[in-house]
Amino acid sequence: MARLANWLRLAALGVATTIMVAAAFPAAAGVDLPKLEKGKGEKCVEDTQFMRKNHMDLLKHQRDETMRKGIRTTKHSLKKCVECHASEKTGSVAATKEDFCAACHSYASVKLDCWDCHATKPGAQQVKKSTSNSSRVTKSASSVSPLMASSISGGNQ
Amino acid sequence: MNNPSENNVDKMEDRRNFLKVGAMVAGATVAPGVLFYGVAHSRAPEEAASIGVRWGMLIDSAKCGDECDDCVTACNTENGLSGETGPQDTQYIRKLNIKDLRNGRVHSLPMLCQHCENPPCVDVCPTGASMKRADGIVLVDRHICIGCRYCMMACPYKARSFVHEPLTDQNPEVPRGKGCVESCTFCVQRVDRDEEPACVEACNANGHQAMLFGDLMDPESAISQALKTHASTEVRADLGLNTGVRYQGI
Image (tube, rainbow over all chains, first blue to last red; front, side):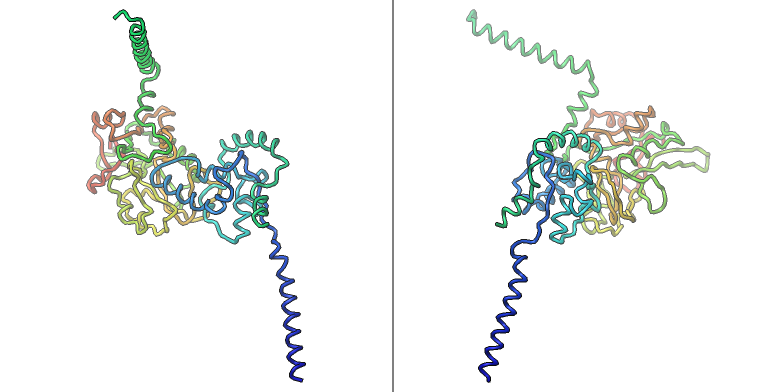
C-alpha cells in the first residue's frame, strides 16, 4: 500500500510539473515585445544595442554638462532625441504607450520623471524642420520594420 | 634679389596683406558693433561657460515706462510662463512702481533675479541645486532641487517662484515642472547661442532702450562703458552681494 501511495504521489508531482512547464512555455518563447516607431533620421547617434543599454547614462552626463557648465553639444541631448523620435501620430515621445520612450518604459515598468519638466514634443521650429525631413525619409524607408522592434526579436533568437 | 621665385613670394605676401587689411576695413565699415560683439562673445557649443565672462544687466529706470510691461510679456513667451501674477504663479521678471513718499517721485523698474556674485540662495541650498555658473548666471538645477524653498526665503529680491501644479507643453528649451523652485536665468539658452535675454531684446526692439545686457568683465563692452560713465546702483547694496543687475536713476 505504501508503495502504491508513493507511486501515486510521484505521478501527481510529474503531472503538476508538466502543467507548470507548459504554462510557462509561452513566456519563455517571448511575450510581445514593444514595437517602436522608427526615428526620423537616417540612424541613431550610437549603435542601437549601445543606446538600449546606456541611453540613461548618456542623458545624465549630458544634462550635467549642459546645466552646470553650459556645454550645449547636440549629439546626446534629450531635445535632439525628442526631435528624431517623436511619433508621427501623436507628435510626442510619451503621449501614448506606443510612443518611443513610453513603449519600452511601460513594458519594463519603469517610471520616467523626464517628462514632468521636459517637453515631449519638438518645438515649433523643429516640427517644421522634421516634417520636411520625415517626408523624405519615410519615402525611402516606408517598408522598413520599426527600428528597435526588429533588433529586439533578433537579440532574443 | 631678381630671382623670379622670390619676387613671386613677395607678391604673394603683398596680396595676403592687402586682403587682410581689406577684410578688416570691410568688417569695420559694414557692421562694427555686430562684428565686434560676435568676436568677443562667441562660444562653441562644446566649450564650457568661462570664468572670464560675467553676464550683467544695466536698467535705466528713467527710460522705463510706468505702464510698459514689454519685458514681462517677452519673458513669459520665451520661458512658457502663464503670465498670471497670483501668489502661487511664477514670475521671472515683474514691474515695480515705487514712490518716494517724502517728495512724491515715482520710479518704475523691472525686478528680476539679480545674479549676485555671492548669492544667498546658493549659500542656503541643502542639495546644491541652487548654483552659480562660471559666467555668473545663477540657476536652479531642477534635477536635484527637492523643492524645500529655503532659497526663496533667502533671496532679498523675492526673485524666485515655486511651481505648485503639474505643467504641460513646456518650451523644449526651458524645461520646468512641479515641485521645483525657479527664477530668471538671463535666458541662458539664448545667451549660450549669443543672443540677449528676451526682456532686453523686447525693450530695445520697442525703442525704450532701458535695458542693457553684456559682459561686465570685458572693459570694452557697452555695459562696462555705461557703468564707467554713469552712476549706477545695486538694490540692497548693503548686503554686499555684488549683484549682476544694476540700476540707473533710482
